[in-house]
Length: 193
Image: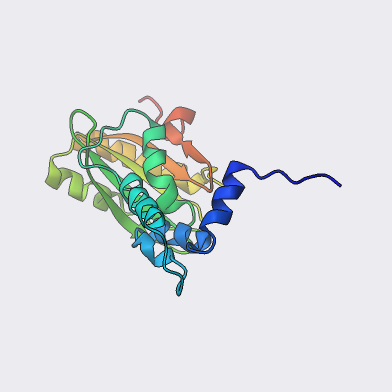
């Protein structure tokens, strides 16, 4: 008979199991809702569990004027909130001249596998905020972040519109479950003209 070793992640899950429903916690984080709603009813949690939920709430939401330095920074902001959504969402991040986050909005919520994007709407808030640049992102509810032909077409249209409006589209990200794709890094939709 072999002894079963407990890994740190397993030990943490077992310690939190009487107090927190992990699946509900992920859904609440994805929806931007109060993480304390993931507490298991009827069992008063210790102060440490409440402190953990409060810390997660702070860490999972971008700080005002947070600077974006790479596609990984954007993915880190969006993965928790978007990776487990049931419907496709299209978000726009507005950046100032130093690539600091001015705002992040959910522009569209779509169906299980699509969201219709009107390019003019993508730049509406950016023009109002006098943004220097934007980054767009959407997630695939299937969990696979491979861009579709429609993703490439919309990205090209957004990039071209940005050139006309003098608001550069720095990147277009596709978020999946545990993975993401930067279309700029892959050279898709950002062809030199």
